[in-house]
Image 1 (cartoon, rainbow, N blue to C red):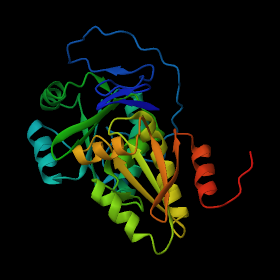
Image 2: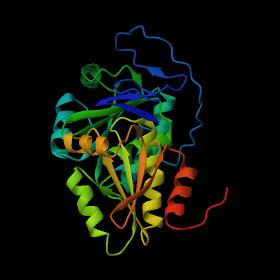
Image 3: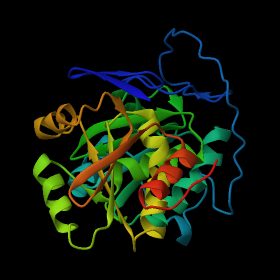
Image 4: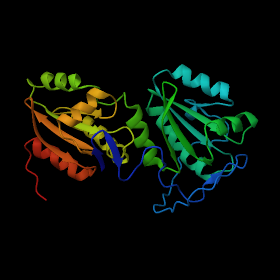
Length: 294
């Protein structure tokens, strides 16, 4: 969980601006100047099982036609501009990187299911132009994923596995799920008013933009929003999106995220703090009136 102190956010498992632990055997880009940084130990070794999709350096096939390969800074900047406010996910790869080849098929599968997200591929060792692009974007290890909205970099990761990649894409680019996106206190009040008549349970997921546990649990929230749509309304708010959201967190006395607020008949009936999938499901069932035994 992440702890909120006044308006400053202290992330216990994840600190904004830093990267998660990297997989071992990362591929360094030989054309970049090496920098000395503290060694990060690999505690979780992820075995990736690639699907039958071509590696980044292979010829483009029909299956990966939604992944746009860019070859220069000009093409890169144009792609970000064309995407406007859509989420853009960029994989920086290298032809000799085994990890790049392993993670790329999963990005291809995501590109086919997430039509509201744009996916780009940059092969850092392709040419001098792509080397210059990697240098400008400060990419030193591959595979490296950067996330952009409105031409602004909002998140980046190195050495992640498929589950983390899926979670990040859903969390930062979610416009296609049944989860209602709330951007102000007024949005919350309207949602509550809209469901006073049908008496559906509202599950409000309150998080922060760069909170690791918030990203981790969000795919579960999406799945539940689809399977429980008849009886439960799922919504999400990022507390650090604007002043209105921040004030809502203060008013609700939210001090750790993710926090799930359970609302029915216009009243907050309870809350769950944490990212445990089983515990969250149990709490939702409890506030639905389903008897839960442990």
